[in-house]
Length: 366
Image (cartoon, rainbow, N blue to C red; front, side, top):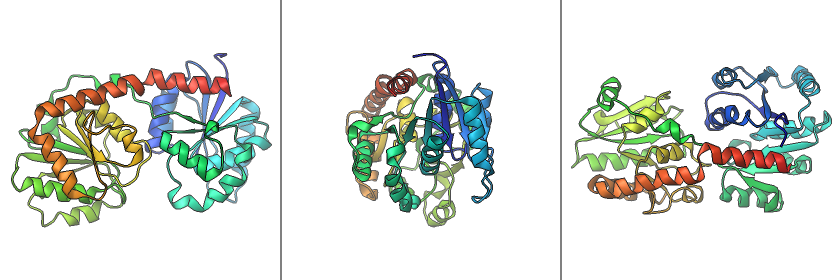
């Protein structure tokens, strides 16, 4: 494939989120193979600055109000100036806007990147179906999503390519003064650390983890629970543990830039989520070589094989979650085996070089 093949990436915003972080990991490596640029529909956000610092051009349409058509004119000018051969769109609003106006402005090849359920935007699915003829190809993160999305849209699964999230394994291989890190976080350095990395929002299952942790703490005092992330559920969760005996050992750490370091000082990782796309948190915990406890939903089962590279438990089941965590606390040999196998899974299937080759192959086939 010609090195200068032009790819335009269209997103709503470049705030800190799963999709945005995936682009931050992917595009600086992808630009070695193609001329890729990013178009952001609204706002100027941290990930945009980080991409630019790594040599990926970012253009802003500066949409402020939906009825202001100036952003459409700016989009047309960008296309006329850059002349992309492929438009690659992410999430529902760019997917719909890009396939319609991309076609109108002369882009013949459009890739729609479907990532997770539409959730609050489910009503837009009818427009998704009406405009699907404008899409050249779709990407999804998992085999589960390929089957589900193909069925929803009434399309052949052949029109979908699975492109998992990218993980740079080198990012998680480093030496760290763990005692000093624990001191900076103001956590008990002698305790075992159980870590959950997830936004504090409904559907992530934090309440079941807190209940399981409280029960474990009753006869196992030397444990910490590290909750990394923020969200609208934070106050409710903090209120929930006010009567818990374990509350002093539960740390709400908020959004962090040192996630890899926190995983490095962790002993067990858990994500009791009720639903998920492909979880960056689980991938990062796997890359860190941690034993993992997560729920047995279909997308998680594509990453975690029970008792091979992690443990799976039913959703909304604090007792099963408690039992699995207790099992890992008691069995260091099991922890080491699961953690090593999890890391090997990343190396073989999700490392950055592997995923970049899949993306380049897709652009080539389009």
